[in-house]
Image (cartoon, rainbow, N blue to C red):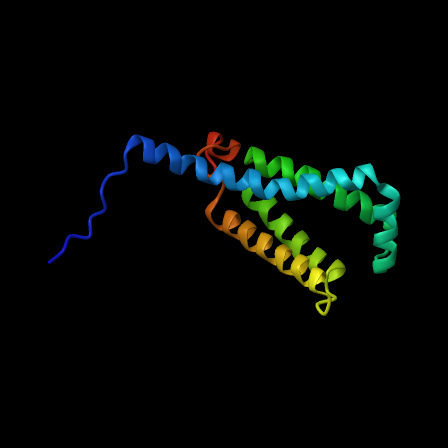
Length: 143
């Protein structure tokens, strides 16, 4: 009968494994940080897009979206309250997909819709499994 005991990971393998969660958090955060910076750089265009989508209180929606993207992106990178931040960003990504990218007959909009869903899926993985060892959550004893 074959043994099902996995080999003990090497120190290099363990170090690489510790880098994967933080790398994933940084890569996912990039999307939110760039989008939030774009909102800050072009508030008029962003407000027009929000108004065109029919969202109530465009200035409040603009401020909330900018705060969620930049604040959430930075918190995700730091790994602070990561599970909650990842859930908020996942809900935001799905809401954005449904609100701004629901014209699925347009191939570009379908791409953005599916991209947002994929990002939400990755964030749900972070919410389920935590920030990993290189995070403020790990330093504070939160898994």
